[in-house]
Amino acid sequence: MFTNDFEANNRGILVYVKEYLSCKQINISNNFGEYVLLQLDVNNNNKKLNIATIYRSPNSSQENNTKMCSLINDICKKQGNTLILGDFNLPHIDWKTWNTTGPLEYTFVDTLRKNSYLR
Image (tube, rainbow, N blue to C red; front, side, top):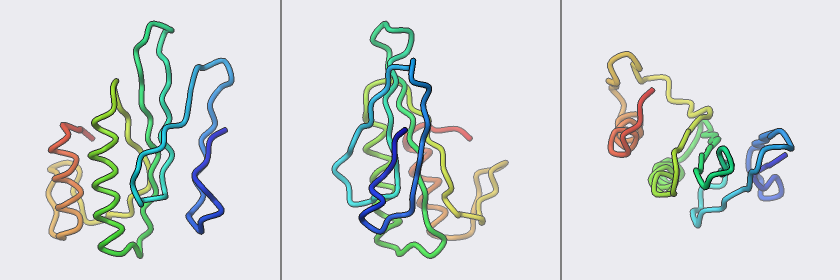
């Protein structure tokens, strides 16, 4: 079981991993606290799978949004393949076309594109 820091008034994120999987939690020097980043050893042959679970509050400030996009950039620099999932509370993105009308949503989609992510 892995969590973010409940003590720091963050929203709680909890990730369960089967005990037979080789897994460790990775911390990134970033002030965005609402995430859990795990690194799994795949097939015991030094291949890594990074799994990031992120929560963005619908009332998030612009500063917090910037920190979240910076966190995504930092996660993408980690060795291995990466899966990012979570609740981003960005309802104005058309995921079929990757188009949006909002500046926050545009910044988020642009961050994903720059890191070669697909939906």
